[in-house]
Image (cartoon, rainbow, N blue to C red; front, side, top):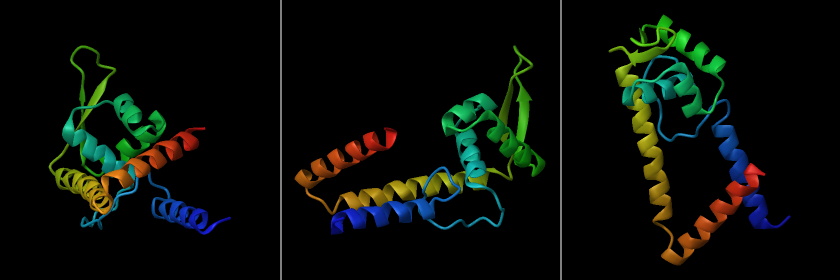
Length: 147
């Protein structure tokens, strides 16, 4: 194995360790004293943008409805979410943030923005020609991951 392959292997392993038990890798330290999972914080962020159901959240997060239900039950218990039944179909419940959850959702959104800013700063260090190569590498790497 060459030096570049070892560097890539180390980078991928570092990313996996940083994102362990999370569904995403975000930059920035959490400022909230509230102990929530990354999934719960992501649910709050999504709900700050629009009204969603359990099914909508599962699709958006690419996780099971059971995992979303577990996260939502905990958030409801902590008074961070309130459910509203659909007026047409009472089986459907939409979730909305309480005032307690709004700052946490905002902070999670900030971490997403900060992560994109980090990527932007990194990419600015490359020429247009180099960015074409980076883009090709990222595309091929993603295709390889998908199998």
